[in-house]
Length: 383
Ligand SMILES: Cc1cc2nc3c(=O)[nH]c(=O)nc-3n(C[C@H](O)[C@H](O)[C@H](O)COP(=O)(O)OP(=O)(O)OC[C@H]3O[C@@H](n4cnc5c(N)ncnc54)[C@H](O)[C@@H]3O)c2cc1C
Image 1: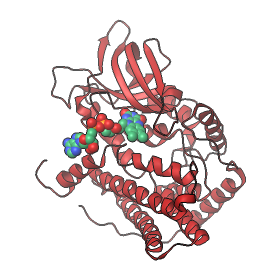
Image 2: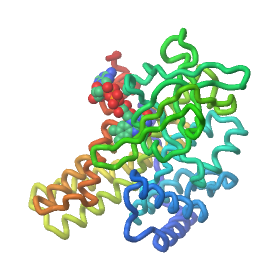
Image 3: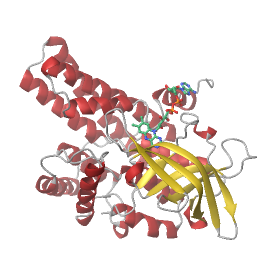
Image 4: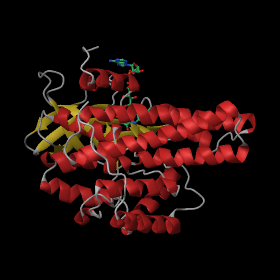
C-alpha cells in the first residue's frame, strides 16, 4: 500500500495564526440561523450569497494561487480551514463540484488559458459547475456511457448528443463537466473526451427532479447538438478517461470530504449524548464514532504527508471513501437512537441521516471502491 509517511502532528506559529484568522472571520460571518438546504432553489440562491461573501474575503478557495482568488495556502492550512469551517457550522459548499472536483483536474490537465479563464469565475461563484458522469444506462460502469460528441470542423468544435442524469444541483448550475464518446470505434475506455459545457447553450435541456427527501436539486440533462468549442476540451481528445479518473480521485479522497466534517459531527454527537444521557451500549457507540472520526483525521494527515512528498497511489482515495461514508452512516444512526421516538422528525440529524445513506452510493458505490482496493492496493485477482 505504499510507504507510510512520517507525520508531524504539531502546527507552526504561522499555521496557528492562520487558524485564528479563519476562526475569527467565521465566528463573525457564518449565517445564523442556518441557511435553508442548498439543494432547493431558494436555498441555493442564499448559498450563492454566502459563497460570494467567502470569495470577497478570500476564503472560498484558500489553497489556490492568489491570482485565481485564493491565498496560496498549503494543504495543511487547507485542512485547518476545513476544520474551522465545519466547527463553526458554516453552510454546505454548493460550489463543491467545481472547486473540489473539477478545479484539481484543471490545475493538472488544463491549459494556461483555461486556468485563467475558468478558475477565477469558479472561485467567485459566477460559473456554477455540475458533474456529468452518470447516464440512465451507465453508473458504476462509467466506461459504458453512450453520450457522444461529433466533430464540427466548420465551427471549430464539437456537437454533444445524449443524456446525463443524477447531476447534483444541475437544475441550478450554469456549466457541466462530463465525458462524451468521441471515437465510437475505439475500445471502451479510449475514445472518450472530457468536455466543459455551458448549460445555457442552444441544444441543452435541463430538467430538474426531486430527491427522496423532497429537495429538488437533481437534474437530467439532455444534449441535442449543443456546441462546445475546442477550447473547452479538458486534456486531449480521446484521452478523457484518465482526466476523469483524476477527478474521481478528488471526489473520493481528501478534497470532497475532509476530516473536519466528521470531527465536527462527532463533537455534536458527544454534546447530544451529554445533553440527553446515553445508556451503556449507546455511550460506547458515541465514543466509537468519536474515535473513528479522529482516526480518519490521522489517516488523512498521514495521507497529506505522503502527498507533499509525492508518494500517494491514487487508488488510496477509495479507502477514504469507504471510511468516511460508512462512518457517517453509523454516526447518524447513533444520533437518531439517542434522540429516540420523541426525536426530531425533520431536523438536522434526521436530514443528515438521509443524506448519509447516499454516501455509499455517490462518488462511486462502495462495492466498486472495494473492487478497486482489492485489485489495485491488495493486488488480488480481478473480480
Ligand atoms: C446523492 C447522489 C448524488 C449524485 N450526484 C451525481 C452527480 O452529480 N453526477 C453524476 O454523474 N452522478 C451522480 N450520482 C450518481 C452516482 O454516481 C451513481 O448512482 C453511482 O455511480 C451508481 O450508479 P447507478 O446508480 O447507475 O447504479 P448501478 O451501477 O446500476 O449499480 C447498482 C448496484 O450494483 C452494484 N454493482 C455494479 N457494478 C458492480 C461491480 N462491478 N461489482 C460489485 N457491485 C457492482 C453497485 O454497487 C450498486 O449496489 C449521484 C448519486 C447520488 C446518490
